[in-house]
Image 1 (cartoon, helix red, strand yellow):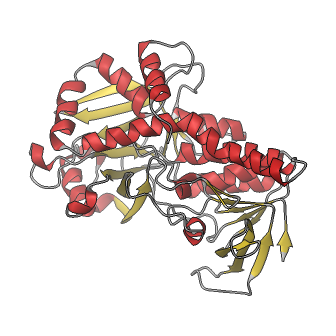
Image 2: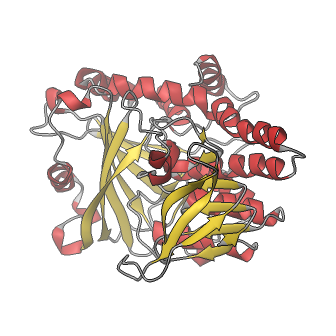
Image 3: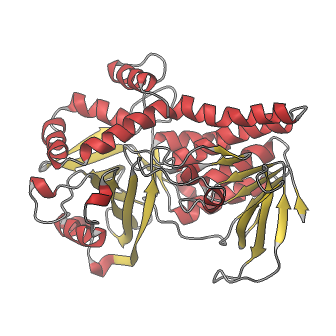
Length: 428
């Protein structure tokens, strides 16, 4: 048995961010990761200015000489046109985005947490939560070491702590073990991506294609999603697509993402070289748990972070920022809980975490879920592309809304619209 102040399960952006913040504050943190670094992660690899801000809170250096590729905005492609829209110039956010493979990003964050004092244990498979009695609070986790293939390589170890943070990804095994199931009334995205060598790897724009078809290019086949081309600045690009499957998705046949990807890639400009001859590795796919589609975020004393709590942005599929964001909010609550004088004080401190999530993200995610339901209708999606893209003032608002980049106080009319809508929307 091993004891610590906090056990964090999963060393992705959410878990590593929480571990870094807590270890830097002096807590004894154990960070458990089932794989070993570097490890692959299915993702678009793009970080908006919101995510860059979280890296700043963590104190992570992001110099281009260290492999971080900077972006200055979005290039939106649709309706036969492309439009380049710089990231908004706002006091509350950096003026640039970044692109970095998740293999590099996740290892950087995990090592950063370890450097602050967190005890990082790789190749450690967590199998179940430990509880005080049959229905009592979570008091730790059971885990065992695994080899490079994920096979058991040792005996079970009980990792005990007053607080457990579940950052174990979309599978959310710890939450499921406690009976916290995915909410089917909230959207779930699916995405597929591959890497390609390309002479345009140093493009400063994160390119998004807003028209994807499940069959022939006609309005009835337009899918609710977008394709992306994110240059990594190293001679390659992350290329993929994501599609939202909302509340009524079970009534429709599943989308063949790989077929859609092939059709879309064939329509991209030849200068990108997005063909089989330049593909690096296979196409991989994953689910995107969106809009708080797993709640409550505090269950039997255990906190759910990042994908485990369904924290992918329904507007744009971004998950990295919200993972690190949840890690920061969780660390603040846990730090207060560890300092509490008694059990009721500890419980009140931990309850501040889901309350902070609702306050900072709840209204915005409610808007995002409504948006996801709207774009499931092909006519709505087609009209938005046809009527919105040619109007730069409209796209200025759209970028702020989709990327959640509104200045919270002051700003221009677009900032005030996004902030007002997020404030008025119910936080659920």
